Length: 377
Image (cartoon, rainbow, N blue to C red):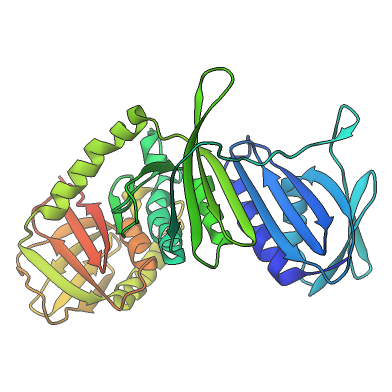
């Protein structure tokens, strides 16, 4: 059975990102061919993904394999198509003269069953625009990158808080991604689920529900669905955990409502290029560097912002119209944190608010980032 690589590989890569977030959680993958379609279904018991691909031929089979082995193999295929064959013991993938064999997974002499996650008791349902899902992936996830190599990370810092007004993520700083959903809701999503949003290229129909288990416990579930893609997950949205988010949320609102004595409008591309050049002098990469090694000192003239690193290198960035700034103000900011913000920026300009000695607030459109100033002795 010949399969076009491009579309299949895009789905495989998105699922692979999610399953590799925590290697302790193993995922299995089911391949089902029937009625002219190939269904790729995978689950790690926390989330379930089902994707439908049209086939050019009529075949029938079912196979279950270890997800990461299969997905990593697909991710490495560079040919335009590959041949997928199934027998009672294995899945065989042929690419030209090369071939790879992955054993099927049996349980009690029966092919393993992959159970989808379904919602029995739907409480909330509504459409969600694809641009909202993309913005959560592209904007809020950048905030969580600050946690790489961090110590003493709290449970709340690893989650995305979503309500009808937007998505919020908190680490050493914070990100508010403002949007409007049709109905009130409060959700906590983890990084595995958010990475799976990359599967979608069109708006989804969303459902939230609560089902009671035989043990008397309840499970909160969400589904995101299009004609060809079904994503479901068990989520943790209990009031105790959500309430842990509220102090950070209220603190962020206070920061955003603060009146700042300085405001500059600058080119997002100019800032990004300046940071890229300055960070060339950092021995470590931006992703792994010790935060103490990549501070920058910001000073101002009437028409420019100057960024100096600890090595004596200086970048000058022009200030645009609509700015007001005190030339005797200086501040120290983590350059890595600032780079993560500008890397996610799709706008031509950003506005940087500062002056209270505590934080800078960067705004563009409905997106706001808070980055703390660094206190120096």
